[in-house]
Amino acid sequence: MKLIKNVSLILPHKIIEDGALLFSNKIEKIYSVPPIELKNVDIIDGKGGYLSPGFIDIHIHGSGGSDTMEANREALENISRTIIKNGVTSFLPTTMTMNESDIKKALSNVKKMKEEGLKGAQPLGVHMEGPFINKEYKGAQNDKNISVPYFDLIEEYFDIIKIITMAPEIEGAKEFMEKADKKGITISVAHSAANYEQIKEAGSWGLSHVAHLFNAMTGLHHRKPGIVGAALNGEMTVELIADYVHINPAVLELVTKTKDLEKIILVTDSMEAGGLEDGEYSLGGQKVFVKNGEARLEDGTIAGSVLTLDKAVKNMLNATKLDLNEIINMVTLNPAKLIGLDHKIGHLKEGLKADLVLLNKNLEVKKIFKDGKENRGDFYL
Image 1 (cartoon, rainbow, N blue to C red):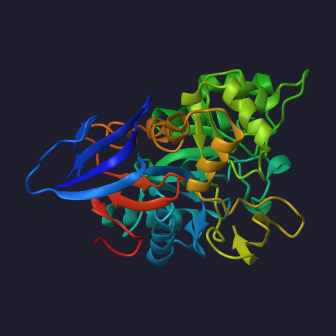
Image 2: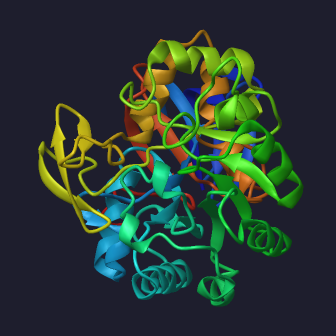
């Protein structure tokens, strides 16, 4: 049993100053006033910092030199170990628009690793981005593998696929989305040329989420509201890549004034260069050049990011007037709710898993606990 004291506890609706938290593999008790005496308990001094739930990244292709599409233990293990150092205790490895065989291998690998467990952040399932997208808004997806929707691709993987990002305006989308929705998969839109009316109609087919809002989709125009207009004027949840590359800080602030804060989720959309130096890398079989924190294809198209989720939190805090707990919800409770796991993870509550991140006053990650065990990305202590 462990007790973290001298720490501010970040709860969904408030921050408890100078609180304490008792935990084993789960959260045992939350104290607004530190207990005077506890027996047989290891004491951890929070040194006046913050204690947050473990971060959850629901859109991440890779990091640390590895990519989900490599479809092997070594790659996923490396991503897992790399991102937990940034406070991410759970994630959705994200696939790319590649051929059917490669996608299935990646899905099968995540399924196996989820069952066996990894040494760092744990995969909760898969975010399948493509291949059912619109070539007009392909972004960094390889158009050679873009396809009309067909159910055979996902039939064996209902238990592992949590999100599918696709274009609802393409042929066969309606039938596919309705079937996937009935299987409990979150249907997301991006890489799409859909207009406002099409997005509203697709809501009745199961569409409820928007991947990397503003990017690879129809924008907001006063006579053509597009996907962005539908997202800001509806109940859909939205992802934001808060790296100041994909979205200007002023627009990040605008979204927080427009959307219900419970509907906003911060993601990295990180590719294999995450956490590494500038140079040449790969994404979906395409060359990517990273320079000054920007990842781009040879033609200049933005190709994912090198953002980390702890940095996204700090960027959002600097760009908006939100309270820290409101922003932390965007990397913890909100994504947990989206994929139906907020009864297990995503907030500090007695009985939930002890996935915890200890931050200092500058919001730098100092300690990470996964299932109650301190984790440095290499081994459990």
